[in-house]
Amino acid sequence: MSNDKDEGEDLSMWDEALDEQAEALAEGSAQAEAVELEELTEDSAPITGDEKRKLDAILDIPVTISMEVGRSNISIRNLLQLNQGSVVELDRVAGEALDVLVNGTLIAHGEVVVVNDKFGIRLTDVISQIERIKKLK
Image 1: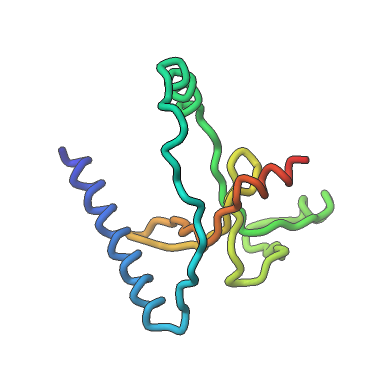
Image 2: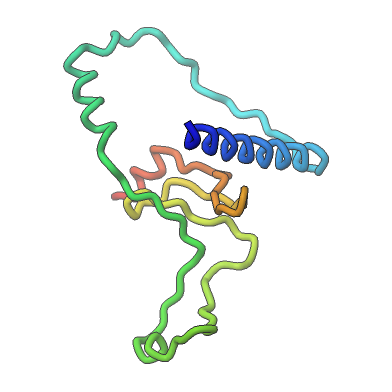
């Protein structure tokens, strides 16, 4: 029971942070842009039992999600000289969006948020399926 309460408090903190961000955006000059979406159709046949079983099988496959702040290429000589307090320059500027990778494949960009002393990432741009497939070729 205590764990459920802690999770509820954590979710509440995230909700508050997201509401705060939404208010900040509403007060600023940022305005939402209209996006054209494809119409959903009911033409497709319902999922069969076999298809559902296959889908259930892949839904449980674990994947690794990682957030990349930036990259840098250095020589082994410089790598061996790193110690506590060393600074490694990255290929990104401060405030630039982070990359969100799933099994090493870029799927989105986001920004770091801190809620209740824990880091998180708010997705700001999700790469479309078509763009991801094009990058594989």
